[in-house]
Image (cartoon, rainbow, N blue to C red; front, top):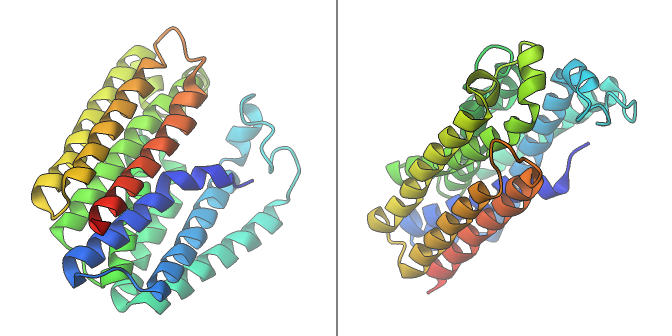
Length: 277
C-alpha cells in the first residue's frame, strides 16, 4: 500500500534541512540521536499520510481505472487494518518529536493538519497541488527543527523551494487524471485549466522553485558545490518537462518518479558535499 520508492521525494530533503540547520545554527553536524529520531519521525509522518490518503480516497480510487488495483479497493487490506496502522504511525511521529525537542512537539498540530487535510482538498479546490507542496515542504522544515530546536528564515526559504518543486511535479502527475477528475467533480489544475495550460503552470512553479533553491547559495554559507547541484537540479527540471506534452503523456512516470527522485538525491548529495568541504 505504501511505496518505498516515494520516500526518495521527501527524506533526502529532511536530511538536507537537518544538516543545513545544524551547520548554520550550531556550527556542527546533527548528532546520531537526532539523525535517528528525524528518520523515525519521517517514517511515521509519511506512513500516516499515505495511509490516510488511501482511506479517504477509497471510493475515488475504486472507480478510477488507474487506481482500482490499489490495496483497499482491491480488498488486499481492510480499512480497520489501515486505521490501526495510521494510529501507530502517528504514535511513532509523536514519540519521535518528543525525543527531539519541544519546538518539534509544539509544531506537531500544524504537521498533522496538513497530513490530514491534503487528501480532502481535491474535493473543493484546484490548489490541492500547493497544499501537497506545503505538506512535503514540512520535511526539510521538520529536519531543521529536529536538529536545531529553532525556526529561521533560511528554513522557511528551503521549505518554500521544496513546496513549490513538489507542487509543480504534482500538477504534471495530475494530468493523467484530468478527464476523470472533470467528470467526477474533482478539482485539479489540469481538470480546471486543461492539460496544456497546466503544464505551463507547472513550468512556472518550477522556475520559482529553482530560484528559491538558488537563493540559498547567496543567502547561506552554502558554496560552489551546492551551486553546481542546483544547476544540475534545474537541468533535471527542464528535462522532466521535455518528457511530457499536451498530446503525449506516455513518459509521465519517468518524468514524475525517476526525474524527481534523482533531483532530490542530487540536491542532498551536493548539499552534504558542500558542507563537508
